[in-house]
Length: 163
Image (cartoon, rainbow, N blue to C red; front, side, top):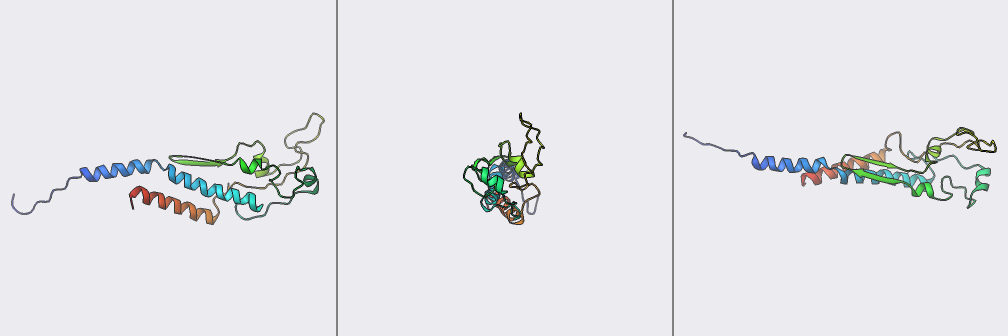
């Protein structure tokens, strides 16, 4: 054959693409970063006494304040158990942020007096209405958190690409 011949061996390109695919299949570092953003939002909610979207929690009643260990008027911070129980679990393709504290959903969603039945002495559980004081961002990420998550995803992709 006369003229110019260009040969292209895709072996090296395929090898690099396979390596990249392997790195993209395990997004655990990106998921950990996303979990960290959400965890930071939850921590701030407890510190500031507001939900992840900036809405202040309803204040405690005088009866509740009087019954607390520390007599504090700061919602959801009597013992610190709930705030300290928030866990982040990240794996290659997902992250979860949550708690295993049994009363967490009562505070996240609220409850009406007697929603959970009655005590042995026939008292209502809970003994009064508990207003919702959301601490987990269940209605989507707040805009600032969303920007941080997108940045974490971009950084993770750039790292995987070796950029």
